[in-house]
Length: 95
Image 1 (cartoon, rainbow, N blue to C red):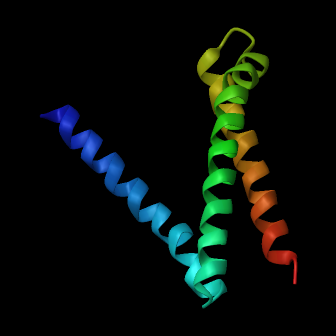
Image 2: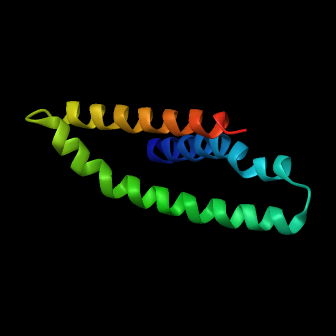
């Protein structure tokens, strides 16, 4: 039961966080063709980003860790968060 509760909470949180990304297309354009195009690009870019993240997290954690793997993961996640913040700021700085 505990596993189900944790899985349900994780999926609910992910869905709530991802809702904004999925609905932003309607705010960008009213043209249905452009909306489908946007959603297609969004899906492809998310898959590529997930692949890059999956392939880079473990080597980064090992590189940062030394002997303490937990610290390596913490530093790797911080680095990825800083990269994400920079991308977010860059995206909204473009007119």
